Amino acid sequence: SSPIICFFLLAHWISWATMSFSLLQSLSYRSLGRNPLLCVRVSASRLLSSNTRRKSRPPGSRRRTRPSSTNQSPKKILFQSLGCPRNFVDTEVMLGVSVSEGMEITQDCEEADVIVVNTCGFLESARQESRDAIQDMMAAKRSNSKLLVTGCMVNLKQQQQEILERFPGIDAVLSSGEIDQVAKTIRGLDEKKHHRGSATTTADVGQGKNKGNEITHQSTKDNNEEQSSSSSAPSSSTSTRVHRRSYLENGDTPRFLATPPHYAYLKIAEGCRKQCSFCIIPKLKGRLQSKPVQQVVEEFQAILQHGTAKEVILIAQDLGDYGKDWNSRRLDSMKHSMEVNTSGDLATNRSKKSHLTRLLEAMLESMNDNKNDDENECDDRFWLRLLYLYPDEITPDLIDLMERDSRIARYVDLPIQHSHNDILKAMRRKTTSEQIQDTIQRLRERLPDICIRTSLMVGFPGESEEHFQHLLDFVCEQKLDHIGVFMYSNEEMAYSSKLDNHVPEHVKQDRYHRLMEAQWQVVKEKHQRWVEEQKRLVIVIEGLHESNPTRIVGRHAGQCPDIDGQVLLEGQPRVFAGERYWVEVTGFDGYDLIARVLQEEEEKING
Image 1 (cartoon, one colour):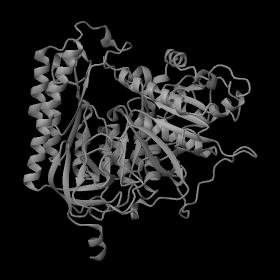
Image 2 (image 1 turned 90 degrees about the vertical axis):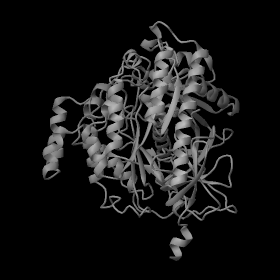
Image 3 (image 1 turned 30 degrees about the vertical axis):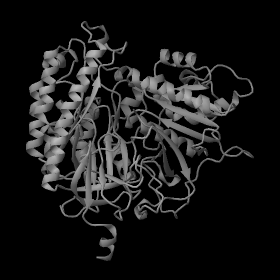
Image 4 (image 1 turned 30 degrees about the horizontal axis):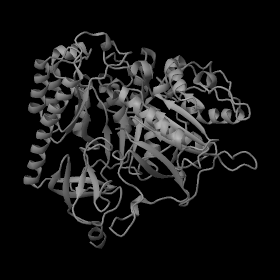
């Protein structure tokens, strides 16, 4: 299930670069993604704005925030974040807005003045998890504290009404497109506390029913157009607010980095332009919006200048669609901007490249001279990870860039969904089975060490046993590194709900288990081969194992945090959180590898 993340501030900066692990030392961070409820300790110095570089401050100092009301202690706020990394970034934005407004973050429901639940509404299982989280918070909170529900589960008006009717104790609902209004909404709730009325909704916020410091924003149309410019930040002009289904922060939007300091997410786009028949994301999150190239580069630089992140994970609903919402006028402006800032043949060839490739080149060009050139050196190795790329978006120019620049992690999340052309057509996917297999082959030929992850669906309407057997054979033949298998969820708003020949639940269950067993055999075979080869890998130290706190865990470049397996370390090596080490694979435990550290930190220091 999706992790629920609680955030709270520490009074002092935790220096991960100097924190060593041993059986006698307590660990302030445990690896993400597997505990149902996980506390992540973060520092106020991780408040980020891409157009405001982090200035040097002594450890423990805090960024100046808006003072709280006179003679009142700061309001304490607790966040729970469910769902995907994009939702996680939205929570980081709400954290940044809250801290900037003088609020304090807590992990204790009983001391929280406000509780915010950031929900996921993609599938019924995710919605049920969100309902459970809301119910838990209602039971745990103080009677006089406020409960605010946000996220894509309440993006549509009918969803907002449904959640308010089901949970009358909710004080406000806020769509994903209005998360920057979280502080304003909380102030509005304070004004209503002496004459309690109905819960505040997104419409109330947009129409100014919550009084306080007025915050104006562009309409969706203006916002999309301005964010299409690659040569300048969005305009400060404002117009009447309209309902937005997703939020794409501007360069001056505060964001509180809540991941462990050695990696961070960077959202480059929101919404979706595809029309897959089983998916309701376009209805929940709205149309595609891409950030300007310059803004992404500035946010990237702001993350790097914090000094600890050696991995940046690019996220969007589909990275490959980046920039495809821009009109021709903006494209001409972007092309000119990129050409005047680049010399030689590279500028001449840019017009033939995808917007994603151009963006990656701009990001990499903005870095220092470290290009991961020394294959034996692991300390300063950087990973730029691409998360979620459709098969038809793996263009030749993207593969060329990945081949020549090792700073792009040899990893790609390639959502395939199915292998049979009948089902792919019914799903309204843009690629055929042959094209998918060709893409995988090209990636492996050009990037032999690449790890490929995909998601597959069983039980789509009309899927016969023959169709499923084709998928089963595909998994056995292609031997992909990581696979997530999902049973088809019949969503009322999805086109596929109207199709005939729905597959019974017990058949879905059977196919799910058969496909997972086939993939396990693939993984077991690969792991066994790595043990026999004494495979050597560079890993980053993550923390202690959630169920065995005596064991240290890490992950290699082919493992994405929160999603894939991990590397379990033998013994009690002296290693440092967030640092990279060479290891040798010695065994495996399910989907996790077991390895020994080849060079411990103490040896490196003494050497």
